[in-house]
Image (cartoon, rainbow, N blue to C red; front, side):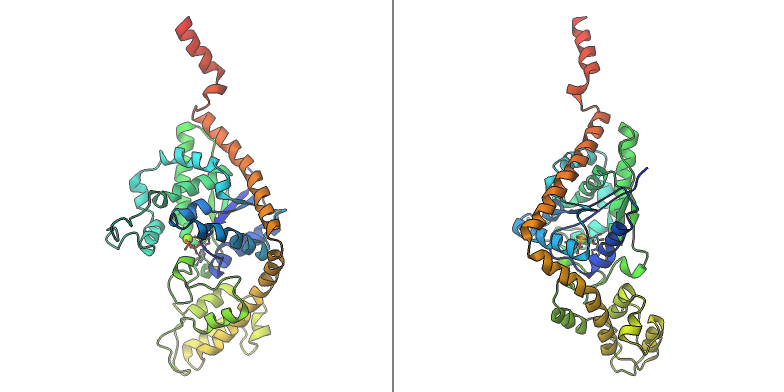
Length: 371
Ligand code: ATP
Ligand code: MG
């Protein structure tokens, strides 16, 4: 069986360093290895609307931002089909069929959705609706089902994402098993592809919170200018107990070191901090005491600027041709729709929802009534 890669992002803002290390950087590697049959990357506008229903303009404005971020990171439309979720209506038909295979209790157990419900203020920690009229939208509650449709429509085998997506992948696999055993083998069980570097699976926010997330306002964006990146790195959360340079410091939970773990590459010390041979030596010094936060931050800043500079440059080029970017999205959406339509057709045939094509059905019923 071939290898098909699919992954996407919600157009709720520009993409940030968490997206980059959690998924985007890996997508570009996978694309360039060419070790797959087809690769799809999509902008999940329908999913973004599940918690932004009153703000469609935000979603609409961010589609181009996400597309520009993709292209500037090196996704190449000649190798990857880039599309917009809402342009594939087949996905919604699939979602409807899948929703019959999932129980309410199963959805309620999803830990990522639980956390997100609290983060978005839909409910408090006791599961009570935060205020009258501001409970959990049904569409938001069921988005793992719609996400399963996104994956299944393209018979994806491999989904490169951050670890917050693990429960979604598990839900998808259950849906595939349930569909195939109920109606026949049509769908493919996907595997999650997490970053091999543990520090990349969930990059914390600059404020030290568990996850860098557009919705939490603790992000360094791929398109931030150098000054902005500097400001954010300099005010980053470190070890609150490390007050003076000579104090021993903690690495665990220290955001600067989490970022260094995620970003430092071969040769970075030689180029930007030659007095240390590697990250372990820097960490040892910090733990012992005698190493200031500012020095570590300056090193991190140099590393980040080095990674971000080529991305920014490519972005400026693509920004000059916005109609061209929309053209890429339109062509990608058309190509993706063909694939999704084929899968939906197979699904409906397996579900016996193919009345007009089923001559045997028509003939047997005709015989029943007319001898
Ligand atoms: P929102 O707050 O609107 O949900 P988000 O910042 O969580 O936005 P998504 O579009 O939900 O971003 O996530 C897109 C992809 O990026 C997913 O694969 C997700 O696992 C990954 N990702 C997002 N944030 C991080 C992070 N901080 N660390 C690692 N991966 C991340
Ligand atoms: Mg998210």
